[in-house]
Structures are given as structure tokens and as C-alpha cells.
Amino acid sequence: MSTARALRIALACAAAWVGALDVAAAPASVTLDNQSRTTACAEEDNVSMALSGRGIARFRVEALQPPYLAAVAADTTAPDFSNCNFDGGAHPTDPSHAFVPRRVVLHDDRRWLIVGITLPSFWRPNRVPVTLGTRTEDDIHLLQVFARQPGARKPLEALVVYPADGYWRAKPLPLARFGDGVYGSSFLLGPVEHAGRPLVNIAAIEVTLAPLAFALRFADGGTAQVKVVEVSRKRTALDVTLQPPSRPDRPFAVLRSMFVSADNADVAEVGFRAAPSAARRTLALDDVTTLEADELRFGRSLPSRHNTSAPDLHFSRFSTAAP
Image (cartoon, rainbow, N blue to C red; front, side):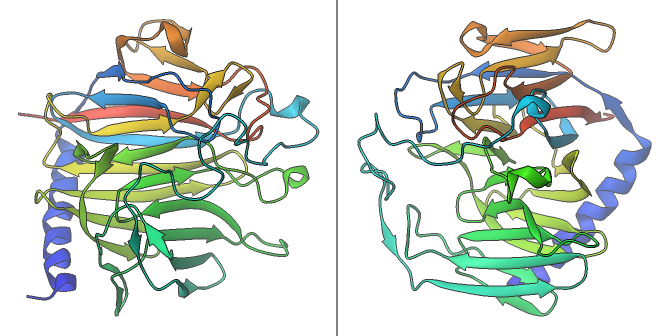
């Protein structure tokens, strides 16, 4: 059986699951575990915030403009390797697997430009088939989604996924004064594993259009549907459905980010609500160990001198399948 056909069968099963979930789902809270460590390097992901829970079947991820953005006149996007032991190349502790670099346009219309990038080297050897329509490519390291807006001179990137290790990055469309805008934190969706760093083992991806969605088949046999529900200057929003639902002993999502200090960070604090009736609270990153929440916002209250316009990431609308 071809990879594309196997993925379509998995998709059909997942679609039936989503339909059943619409009828039988209940709001839920999740456990956040802060697994971060300290660093002085502003280009190193030292922040790991793991989300787990029993039977989580659906949730939303939003990239939102930071609350201080109106007061920022200019963005700061240049990398800062001043306290790092690498200079923009591969991290010295990473494995390195060679590939033939290339760029391929998978789709281009009045709404979306979708591009696949093969890097000259990557830290994992995995080749994950990516299918869009009748076309399948198996060496894409970076899948980019650009949104076209009426009257705009060029499409703007809003979402990327790295098929070989399962990392995602999202950002709202930037305000005009910020050019192309900048990413900040990244996140993992699905059954998280550890192999030197957190990752998700994806076996195959199928991209569908109208609406734009990503169907993921994981190496352990599970699936996820990641539907793009909004791309605007306010937010980029994804609705995620997992089948089977999450296990309590394994994260179903992890936020990965950078923190050196409150003014040099991609995330410096966690906003959360413990329950629908509870007041929202905000804690500095260092004050978070483990907490229960029904929504979480990872962001910054102070403008950072690193990736100033990078978005906050908001996780919400957690629900479980009824037993």
C-alpha cells in the first residue's frame, strides 16, 4: 500500500472520530510541567513547557500579537550569539546528516503559497513523506505557509512545520512597520518523545486545501488533524484533534522557547486560568513548576531586545472524548 493511500485511510478514520467528538466532548484542564533550564545564550531553546492530561482529544493553539506591540516603533530581529558556543551554524552537539539542498513550490494560488525546503544538513536523518494533491516529496525539512492578502505586494509567512522532528512555529501577519515579522517560540503537537531534545516522530503528512489543514500520521500509529482556522494581523489559529486521545504519562504538546532575562526572551511569563470560574493569573517563568490550567498563554509583558515583535502563544479549548 502506498504511503499516500495509507495516510488517506488514516484520515478517513480520523474524520469519523472528529465527527463523533463534536457530539461527545467535554471541557478539560491540563497539567503544565516546567522542564526548562538556565542559559546565557539567546539563540538556544532552554525553555520546555510540557502539557499533559488524560484523554485530551482537541485543543487550539494561537499565535497572538504581544500586548506591548503598540508601544514598539522598531523590531529587533538580529541573532545574538554573544554568549553562545556556536555562531549561527549547527549546534556543536547536534548530529549532522547531509542532504541535497533545494526549494520546491508545492502550491500557489490567490490565498496560499506553500513551499518545501530541503536543508543541506539536518540533525535527524528521517525522510517524512509530505503529500499535497497528487504530489509527494520525502526530503522536506521545512514546510512553509505564506498567506496572500488583498492589496499586499507579496505573501507573508505565517506558519512552518519541520516534518523530521515535529516542530511548529506560527505568527500573526505582521503590522506594516515590522516588515515580514519574526517568529519566537516553537511548539510540538502529538506524542512527544525525547532524543537529545523533545520531538514528535511523524511518519507522514498530507496537506489539504479549502480549508487549509495538515493530517499527521505518527510513527506510533496515532493521527492528528491540524486545521488552520485563522491567519490575520490579530492571530494565526490552529485547531488540533488527536486520535487516540492523550495519555496522562506522556505530553501531547510542548512549548519550546528561549529565556535569558525578562528583557531578553521569547517567553518570560505564563498566564493561565486554573478553571473556567477562576481569575486569570500571570507568573514569571522562574516561578512556574507544575500547575493545572484550562488555558495557558506564554508571552512577555516587557518588550524584549530579542525578537521584539515575536508572538505570544495561547493554548486553550482543551476537551476530552466522552468515555
